[in-house]
Image 1 (cartoon, rainbow, N blue to C red):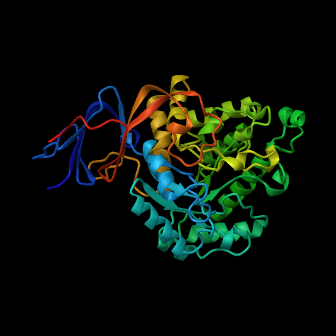
Image 2: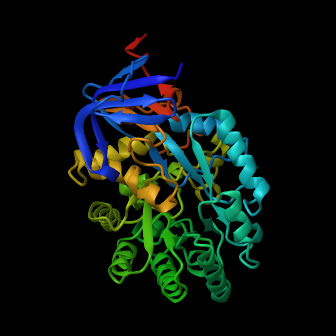
Length: 433
């Protein structure tokens, strides 16, 4: 007898199909079998009462370091995908800077196998743009594509030679692989740890100027035009960077961009008192930059909001500021931080959902991020009005390194469905037949 599930009476929002209505969703096996009208002969065996809640595609996170393989003391694919399920995330994209780097099929297969064994979410990989991420020898992108990578990247490791970068982009273009780039010019950002400005000067910390981002964006846009490579810009942090991407899109270049959720809320002032939990890369910048990022998310220049999840053990944040490891454990704050933009009038609810689903799904090109009949049933049910406090006890991620710890947040996931199965439930099902 096939497994069935009915999600009843929720506000169903599917930006990919321009759907926003109070209706029911019907699931048979691992697929969506109907929206609004049940398929013939459908009988509910399990029911989720979604009254007063939002039902949407499972969130797609473009940047989540799950720490396995290589840094299992910080987290594992099992622990972090479990936290992702509790956060409504059903697809995660892993950058290639694992240990070893994802530059050969065995690493791709290992990550897929561990994710399938855990069973909480899809985990897709970016392949290394250069071997070992050394920035010199090109990886075998054709073999990586056959192994299942959804793009290539050098993560945060710089490619200093513009000729190597050009050849890498040409090679990626031949295989129709998008490259995911972190626009941070290595010479201007070297040894910096925070935004170069008033706060860095007052604290005596070496800064990273705005030009470190804009200079690299200019180099990459020039090469994108020259090579025809599709380029995704990761973790924008400056207003000027957003304007450059907007102009490139208007000129017809095949580019897209994302922003980390914390960059839409925090600024350089949050590092006051040498707050190591606000040590991130790219660094938190000015209020004007934060507002520019918000404008970019609202007008569609930036189509994706990601967690930029980087779990750390406690000791990683307990040293002097410059010696601490950058990064925030961001899975469990992705939804409430995005919803706060709705509450403050920056985004409409459908826009917010789009930046977490359809936008990143389009970048990955894997067919997730929608509620089409016949599609794999990956869904999230959340209460947009639920207030809750972020505490260590409330977090399932192994990393508790977040500047939002102790804050009251609004918007909480009630249920997550992955491949037709309930991968997370805050409350029991309404009924079982």
